[in-house]
Length: 71
Image (cartoon, rainbow, N blue to C red; front, top):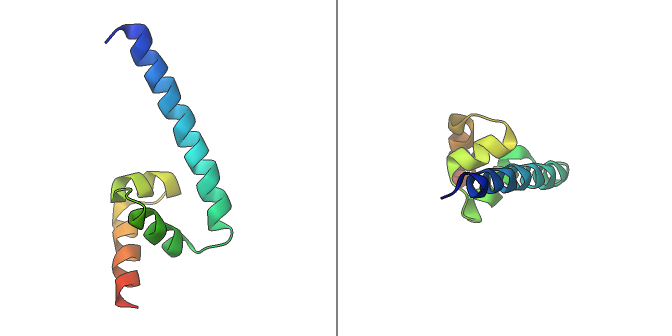
């Protein structure tokens, strides 16, 4: 892959991360972080992606998901 293409892909990725963060911020205003984490997991995101998006550790996300299964 050419250097310009790689830079473009990285720029797109940063913008998508920003958009995801903004959408999550909006969503967490109406849901708890636990509910948001569970929803994102059900939507197909992995634990690391959810943690990065919510600004939490992967372990915290695993706990959220685990505790939600008990309810």
